[in-house]
Image 1 (tube, one colour):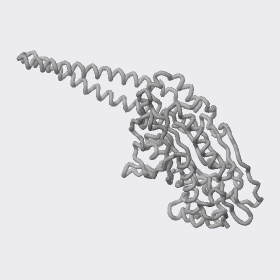
Image 2 (image 1 turned 180 degrees about the vertical axis):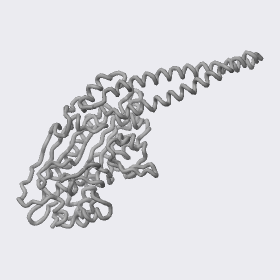
Image 3 (image 1 turned 30 degrees about the vertical axis):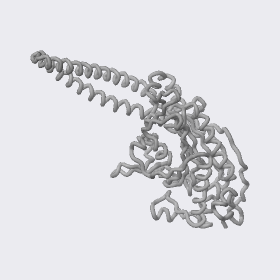
Length: 423
């Protein structure tokens, strides 16, 4: 959430920033500020009422001690009236705080000044590209056909067990999947990220803390009997490890990594672009998360981008980096860089990572603070990135490395797979 102090001090600047997102309800800012004014007025009245009540209680105690019983009893009736007024004010305050929180959760993060304007993915800005797009044979196969030909993935068996979007990996396909996970984790820990194994279900507070709840797009799987949600990414449990904490400046930065399966309903997804591994309901992903002091967060974002670049270069995959425009930016993000690899068989770019900074937006929800060097409490900046999401990486590896006699494995993965070709 946006800090209340920021909303009070810079409402027009916030509206201007949200215009980059094509935010359809700028009037929410005014409604929120009006509610905040009412809340502060009610809080002031409540504080005054409680102060009078406490003062009267002291006077009544003094009168009783001095034997002025009649005067003390007369004041007691005033105390009763103040208590009643206090209860009314407390109820009003609770109601308006609920309304205020509801308004704040509807307002997305303000984009970074460098975010380009735009309405959709077509307006994203390419900022980097590397690698050579291979020239495949005319009869080159997409990954779902390669997976069947070499008995790597069974999509039909996954549909039988669960439904569409839940593939079964087997043989060398399963081993390649496991090799990628281990390789990603090793790269991340070597770069200073501490590995965590975290739960795959989270409670409502955790989903709210990182901005997945309220679930505006209906993408989370919910277990209503227990009030739990299957995680859409390891970002949720990893970041929530620090929910409600007050850190010290010496504790930062905190760098985390973890492997988890991810679960997304992908409601409304259909068509050729969701074939094979292109879009799944369950998939594996290795995540990196950072907690930073505000003045270090942009440099940390650049470091995360460079880290993912290094991994893709070792995997020998052609890739590009896009700076997302305002209209394609996630609700909680201030700035996001998407990584895409080129699928030579499908002849299109496939997104395989997003690296984002949220500034203090998540910290406001998480109530995550730190004491800066001057001893002042300040919101931590949070960042996260895929490092990496496996399905489309696997798809790109299979398609781009296919030959007439098999599929070559990048040198960086051979120590993990134990084989250099799939044939």
